[in-house]
Length: 136
Image 1 (cartoon, rainbow, N blue to C red):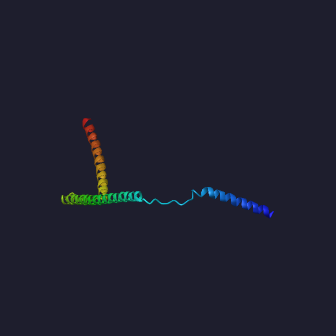
Image 2 (tube, one colour):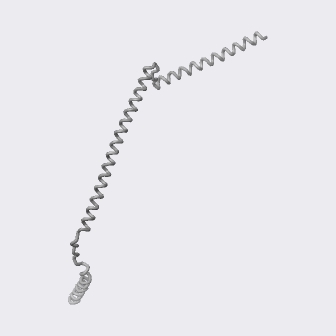
Image 3 (cartoon, rainbow, N blue to C red):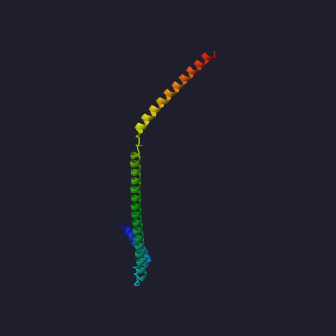
């Protein structure tokens, strides 16, 4: 029995050896090419592309910084314009009215308007009575 196991193990070893012999030519070390000029050219090409990308990035950053400066200048001009406009309105005697003051004035106007309408309708009623009495 032990001989059979030994024979099977030897058979497997021989099969593995045969497979290794078939694969051995594929597993041979590859000699690197002695001419590395193609690799150097590719490396220089990549360096150049990266340098161009960095230059483009720097130009974009510079443009964005210039845009920020322009936007800040325009913002400051608009703030100054609005400040001057408010100052001119305050100096002209027409001070700006807050929303609460506007609301209070609107309510007062509405009450006065309602009072005026009721007074006018009362006067119309009196005039009608007077005309009826005069006409007969």
